[in-house]
Image (cartoon, rainbow, N blue to C red; front, top):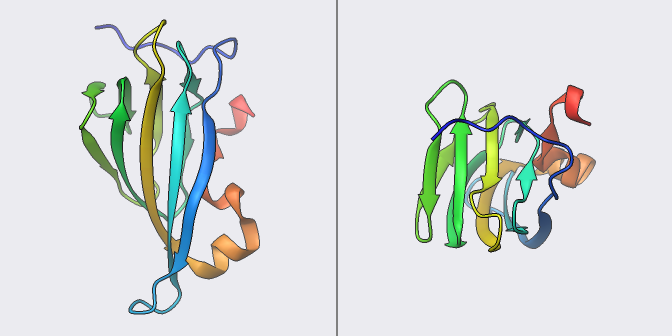
Length: 130
């Protein structure tokens, strides 16, 4: 499958923070859960998650995913991936033009960054796509 280029006309996913907790056994760190629902043909611009560690689980649907310069992967329901701090998420697309796709992302990051920047600390869209 050919890698898609980001298209601003495609709908963006809905992002909902479903939990946020300070990690008492790791002072200064918090864990955050985001539910991300991609509408049919949905796409996210290239982005990063700052210095957060991210793990993702596909609840439903199929996603196209590309990190840094790695090959693009197709990730189906039940699939997972990990993003290291500073990772460049180049492709994050719903593979379907007719069905929604949902993922759950879990992030671990500095509590002070989360408290200072809120959602802006969690998803940092590349400047040319803002």
